[in-house]
Image (cartoon, rainbow, N blue to C red; front, top):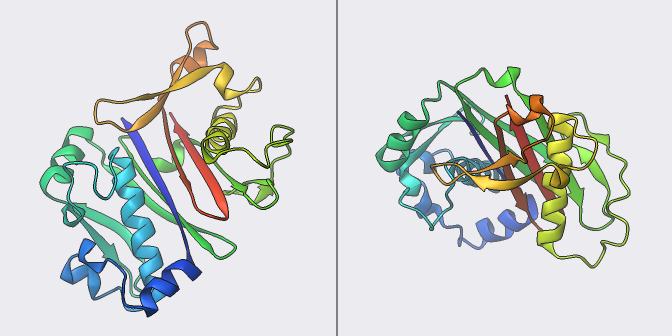
Length: 233
């Protein structure tokens, strides 16, 4: 079993909310709130918890999982490093049977991107692709290496919808993960596992090696970036 979630937040956006005292801190327990003592720590906390919710195929308000079912664990710098689960989240975590978890942050300009992975395999052994598309100029980077990805697929997409750019982000993430040369959306489609989390189904007749892969995917966006992740084993 493998599942993942990602989320991105802007420092500037969280800073405005934090300084106006309108951050929805009630989504966090009293213990968590002790570590949310600046707009920087608030940015990390919100991206982390939403990425974890997405890994469960959920969101802030659209599932049986309560935000307090996820208890972030922080380091000495008030940055989340892991999480514990109770309630519905705890039940799902046991069903997933995932001894390996990973919470990682990446900085993209003034944005913080969080990725969260649950797997029954060591996370470092998984095939992975994580890409970010810049909305202003449609440039694409591999977030793991910060190397530019050169593609002609962004040509003429300046007026495209978030959904179209999101599909492209997933497409490119799967290509990075599986080394698919023909374009991911020619090789499969988005499906959902039994817990509601999105994953990738390869079409029958595709390369047998990839057909046997289990591919977990997730997407996030804000005003500056659209990001997609694909993890496979």
